Image (cartoon, rainbow, N blue to C red):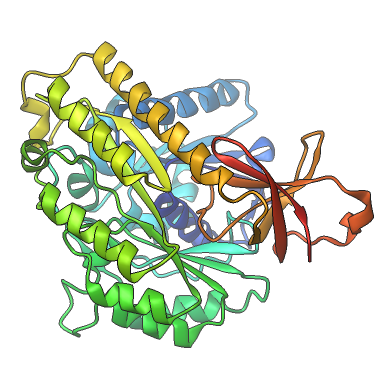
Length: 448
């Protein structure tokens, strides 16, 4: 009998693409891919970017081990960033795991499983994981949207970030491989949204000798696919080119949505973070983005409580957020990660002050978000339906072009029996008239 394999994916969309690639290598002649609740072999694709992510990964492994002790699960395979970062040290301590597999070894998954079934523990990790080309026949996203990962690793060397030590230096995926992947993804006629991802997509091509950069790559992607929404995630202010704005303005399928993690705005903190940009450069870039790209939605991310951050420096960040009124904003409390330069920076900001600053920043953004949402009442917007609602007063939910999957706002569709709701299809676009605004969500009715 075939054994059932289930996967739990943790972390970011980049990790999700890795998980899909891994599943693509599993032999369907020997194994059946199923929901984790029916699995005899469990794969945990881990994240360990910050301590909370590491904690979640370890807790997930330990929960599965309780099932293994009952005989419900035969094997626990740990993949992704945790094995890649901690290697043999963690493998020797984490006896609950039958295998530690780094991203560069996913093509060996079938041999690893066979070996573990013979009661052997396996650790297979490369120093810098290269791409394993797979056409991802197993999708972990709904049919109407997917992710295209155009690079791995990072060479920015931000002092708080563990990614370079886990994933190695920045490596752009060659166009020939991306083209093959796009051709495969385009066979899905229901695909409506393609999200371009990488640790820093604006650095694409810097390591290649072809002269291809992100704007050039996007032009090729546009020619190669007819997907109506193309979204850009994870750009860097240091590498953001004006040609990219020109392309967004000229190509209607590239969404007017810019994800630009800034991390801080105080010049001393930016230098201590090794971000490579100043407050003035960031402000000028934001002005240029908004001047050249009307109705653009700008998403950003900030870190609060970075070592040595003073009350005055945090207030500067808070004032900047209130001034800029970002469309979407996320914040993290600084996480001290071993192996990063910032790990040794002193003094550290106490957890209680970090928590206080985090809530103050997000409270300010909550007010900004509500103000922006209220301005949309009465307007008609294009919404991609993501699913059927289980909430009492709503029939479906979806997203506007200003909202990325999983991380941004939701548009809730009010129940209305007169609008033939039984004909609404998940994964299709509908015109929605906004009738109500919440802090982070919108409510509306289908017009067409």
